[in-house]
Length: 175
Image 1 (cartoon, rainbow, N blue to C red):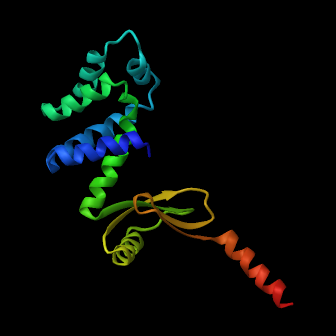
Image 2: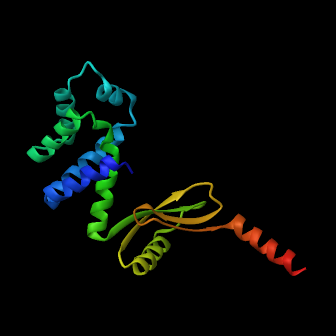
Image 3: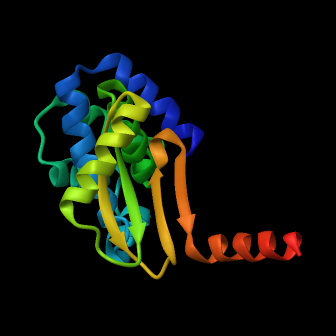
């Protein structure tokens, strides 16, 4: 996470109420997806588009009338920091989650985990971390099962390959 994003978010959290923070977070989260589009990036980085036009463009994408949010976007544009919006969005989501004691994570597995088992894992993790944990199942080629909750810095995994290696090492050391 960029230090610039952390500084902006710290200032935002101190100067905005919860409703404004959530509105900004949702808006920046949707704009973050636009940063994956080359045409969008070329508009944001174009020297032919004025800073005011860039700020207005971003504010229109968020579709807000909140003057604090509009002023914040203008400040980012004025300081050539619009490219930090994805990092600010991520940091805002983390701070909101921390404030609400609710965290999102990913359960990575080779096969889709049914909803009941996913709920059971969420319940166990919620009790373990004394918070509300929500998991999304992501099916990959990972040979095992792994839970990642980035905002808590948690990664719990069981790799089938590693388990086989440990069993082989235990058998070989016993001989």
